Amino acid sequence: MVSPSPSRSWGTASHSASSSPRINEDEARVPFLALPSSPTPPQPDASSRWESAREIGQEFWAQGKGMILVLMSQFFGSSMNIMTQVLEIEGNHGQGFNPFQILFARMSVTVVASYLYMWYANVPHPFGTRPVFGLLVLRAAGGFCGVYGLYYSVQYLALSEATVLTFLAPILSCYACSFFIPNEVFTRKQQLAGLVSLAGVVLIARPFSSTSAGLETPPPATEAPEPGDQPGNADEYHHILAIIMGLVGVMGASCAYTTIRMIGQRAHPLVSVTYFSTFTTMVSALAMLLIPSVSVELPSTPLEWSLLAGLGVCGFLLQFLLTAGLSYVPPPRQSSRRRTLYGSDEGDQDEDKSNQPTSSGSRATSMLYTQMVFALIYDRAIWGTTLSGLSWLGSVLILSSALYVAMAHTTGNAGE
Image (cartoon, rainbow, N blue to C red; front, side):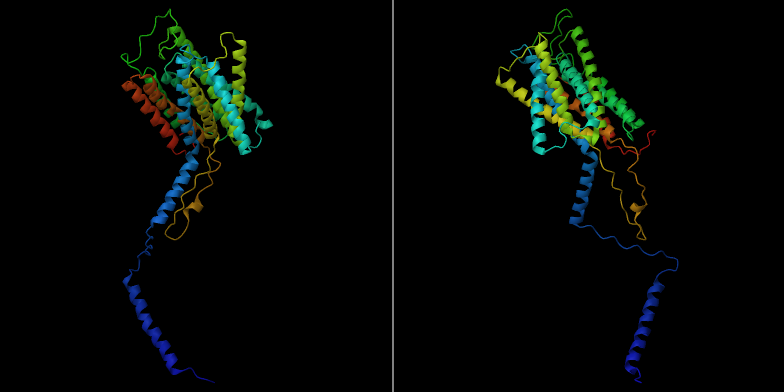
């Protein structure tokens, strides 16, 4: 039997004896009841900060994509409205174009662009499916009533005044969606924000001072507004008639917004746009053929041709972005996953919130209020009207309410 080497055993023993006092000394420095010290978190470098910012940006886009698309659509919508107003007041050698003529020109361009894009993108079911056919037809009819009511009212009202009336549609649409769409809520905070927006609408209802440059004294009540007059120079009869037609447009637009939300992802956004533009083109063509006072008129100047072309492009972008924004359903929010002291993951303890109520559609619809800001800018730039302090105050109220509704965190409690 070979005995262990004395030197090796002695070295092992001496190593144990020498290391043991060091362990005891380290333990002696720590108080008996002290908590274990948490490790120092690593300092984030530039790459990790960039990755975190990219994730935050992606999450913001995923949650706010619908609102951003609706906001962009309102810019093109206001651009389309001011082009329409110029054509209806100063077009056709100062005689003005009829709303049906402008609708036919605009929607025919939208129809062609929609079908070409669906063919190019190979959109599935370009004519829709049977379950949503009725909703698509209802969306088209409501959209026609909405756009005709607006186009008629801008003949006799300032663009900002006509836009004021359209702000009743989002509130009606949000309220209707809370009844017809599961898990869609219209909270008390959103109702309060809507009332604040309406207060801003009231302030902007008469945004121009009586000494506005370029705003002439309205004609007597017995005279009809002359073609080529500035918008707003209408007698009492035409003013009231324009308001009534604007309210008809509000009902139609509310119907269109609600059906778009009900269709959701069951149809491509361009399918809805195609139904609406085709329906409007057919009705406008029939009106020009059957109504004697509405004839087929062609633009006579390069400016009128440019306005009609721009109107068609802006109308297509308006409908596409608006439909995509209202029908967009954001994914569930990513829960923040934070490490605790003992290494557990708090994100694992979060409950599944995918089935909780959401107000994403109401927030996206509320972005329609931002159209007022664009309308005020166009009124100032095109017609040279002077904005009053009340109009600016109303714009701030509308924008603040829209941004609050858009950014407010939804808890899912409809009664809050």
